Length: 106
Image 1 (cartoon, rainbow, N blue to C red):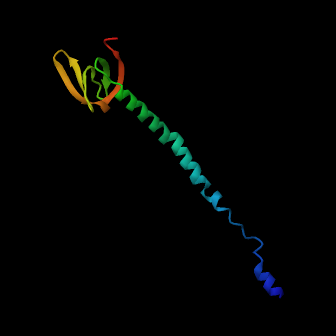
Image 2: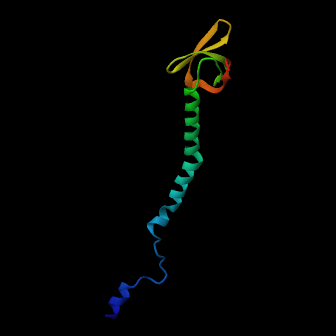
């Protein structure tokens, strides 16, 4: 009988296994940090750019990602017609616009 109770006892120096939650806690913390430091700011920036692009109207002064400065001559569904000089107009994608200043008519 004494032999059976000896087998049922754990070894005196054996470490206990920590709960599963504590094993995954570092991964959960890293995922939360990635969300708040990388993903969320990028989403906010993308929403602000989308608002900027949808608010473009004829007569606005814009700067594109390529550094082209011009005045919006016409706004289409996904493109704009940009006047860059006298008798020079180019058609560009709306997504290429980086900044918009006030309308020349205001």
